[in-house]
Length: 55
Image (cartoon, rainbow, N blue to C red; front, side, top):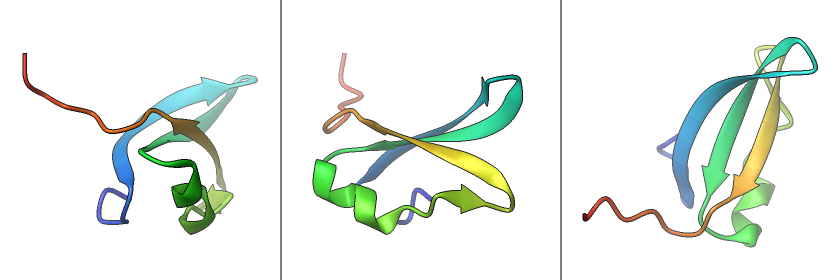
């Protein structure tokens, strides 16, 4: 997923008692590139903007 343009992060989570995948995107337009499911797991797309690791 991180190889897709606009994807800035990925995490696993539990959604309504089921495993799910969170995909963090930089822009709202990037949502169109993300599938609704991967290998049966639902995808939760979260708009974060760019993530900068400086600190």
